[in-house]
Image (cartoon, rainbow, N blue to C red; front, side, top):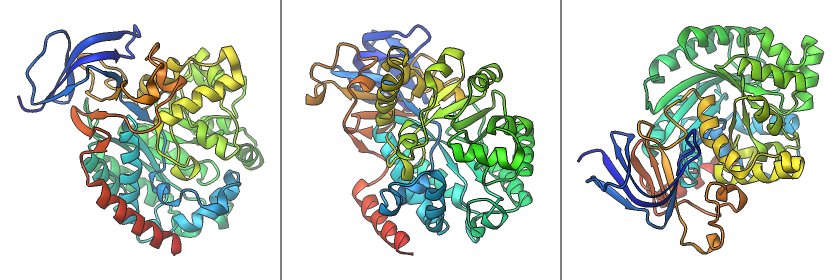
Length: 452
């Protein structure tokens, strides 16, 4: 049967469904990219995975990334910087991004995500150097298609350069008219709003300190006319808060609200420095937050009030953020760090391990507006990953498989990842590319890029 997959004898299936069920010793039948059946019957399929020693989890969903930053990780000159000086230093490298850098950095970052159980990635790309304004998103979608990943691109943007009081160099900013025209083109070319779609687009001006109010306001109008979502950085640092207070006499959230940037079609990356009143407003308007704990720790930005957000009903998803501030693309690691960070900060008030898993699946799916992602059930997209329990690092760790990935963690690749019903990681290796050849090509590009 063409386009079918049977995952048989699944030892434990963590569904992340509304009843938080764990199903034992079941078969999962996949057809045409969706879960068609879960039960005892063993159906005939084109591909078969024997999961008799495995746990199956819904595919993780990354709600904020900067894939181009994969080629500027672990640079010694920025290791101890906070956000504003960190950005100013790295923009001098990032202004040389081109289509090849974008393609291979995307392959690298997405490849790591897939190998660690992430099946859907949203990327916030906002650096469009002069001469390379077109072709960047094309390169990202090409990389996603090569790997078989479900991909949400954002047409990011910056129109406030150093000379106008922003942070980025002049060579990577564009005019409002140029940005809006290209946003409309990107949506027309790539956005697929149908159920199970593999390509979507959101509009994402970079941040309050690198774009004008005009761009934010017009982007919100355009996104709503085109029926796509809105995303930006917000409340990441005290420096940003001081910027909006000094320039607009408003706190960051008040400023964004004044420009039409709240509601269930909006989510912010980071969301660290919100007051209690602001958190209540986010819950009321169902404006979401992408939690990026590792990046926030590395850049000394602070700790988001995730326990309070979850209690209030603020939509919250998980994200790795840019590779240069993480320095990786591993959502499994992000889950464990999130669990430990909030245990340290909030003790018994912290989200449990399983709560963090749901944040990275169902919570993230809600931020992206994808009702068919985030849990394993008939009719849902066939996005999931499998972990073999017969590995030495998981001995004694199997008493609570719902929480295991956060409390114990997984130190390495998953065994299988399936996206859109297709096996994209098999026995820990990517199926869509020759990993060795990709590594060689990417390393050569990195050396030339960083020497520029």
